[in-house]
Length: 249
Image (cartoon, rainbow, N blue to C red; front, side, top):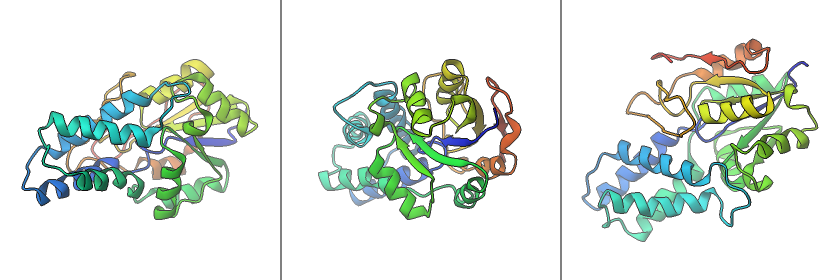
């Protein structure tokens, strides 16, 4: 079947979460005279947050709640207790004000000329709305696992997205920089796949355990824009398409 829709992971693939959150942490630390490896802290924050939400079924909390709880945990781990409630709230709210990789808005418009393009994300609905307004995204649909009640990498999350789009999974291409996301779509649903470089840096760790590796100056590669130019490169199920950006795969 021809590809009719693209479902895009959003937080790790489209948004510069590492840059935004590390800057917010550093700014809060500067206000209190604190120093730390803000990049390491940001990676640990993201890693723990993902592990706390991936694969859940009908939790009584959402990803915003996870981000707030885990923030307190990593602040304690890094001995930054001088950060006030006001500081922590400012860091937490940064998730709703993240910038996208600069090539994405144009790529999104280009992709929508031919395909249905939907967000398929672990992030909360309100977060995706906020960052979409901030960055000028014009989606055909926003599908948050919060709406479904079942979180990726559960097969029900992908199946429900296909059902809501009234498409067979073979008519949908999952676009993500997360190996664990692509592996779930491929192994469980036979969805078509495209792996694009994104917010985890130019070198990714394979496997199902989410381990962001972003470091200063290595967060952005123009994978999503290049994907928009040759998105039909993955014509068969069970094949991942690597769009390597500057700096390598």
